[in-house]
Length: 344
Figure 1 (cartoon, rainbow, N blue to C red):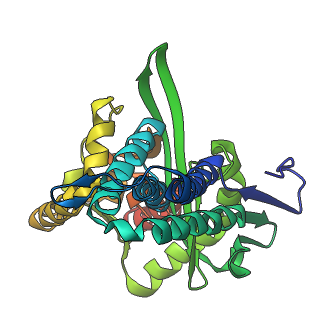
Figure 2: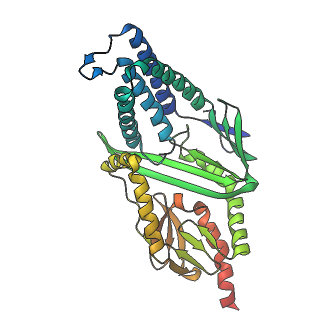
Figure 3: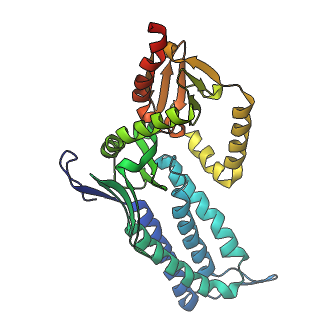
């Protein structure tokens, strides 16, 4: 990562972390091992059902598992380090079975060759991904297989999603605190996700793009409110005189115990879809809570949540509230207008 002080930079680039490179290298080595074992290793053992799986197939299966794990981890950004290790292990095991056992023995060599080439492609793909933050825009670049770029000028920023979490896990030597942070910026018809688990960045590196986007995201939210009369910010509906909050978000988020890491990996096998459907049913079944703006005393942040303080404390995950990181400023801009009629 090329990295300068954020006070006086023209641009700063953040490159991918080594985890994707490591999985790509493991896939290449597994593919090469499969090729060598095909020519120099023992022949597949004959059984009553036919030839047993060859060593080349098994190596190719592990290589394909590493590639699939690298792809899958791009979407499972919310997992901790322990969770990512579980995903990598179980994904490799799941993929190696159909490739290493169910594949016909004659396809061991071509499968190993394909896996090795795919691992090389994945390595260069990971090597060419970067996020560039400048005084003018935020840009996501790609160098392989094509030189592509996705750019959002700051003045075109519309919505900002944040997940600024501090996750506490229990390690062998005591408590281990991990920062798992993600920033997603939308605007100009594009979306750019800046993820500290996938890029060589820490939580402080998110401050500059947040500050750049702040005035434009706040202005875009207020403009939509003036134009449409209401703005949906995830579980919060913003109105000129009140907030409507969905009730299922009352409870705060607690520290994640270790067993949740295992449960999170099981979600990759389909349970995630079921949970999302059930959550959608619960959200639509309950009437939202109406909070008059004059009763809202404070909006603050705690453990990756937006906390709205009225007659109770309401916890809303920041990742579900567009522009939630700027919600206190939006609230300050609205409350004088809501109180104006009462003062006349």
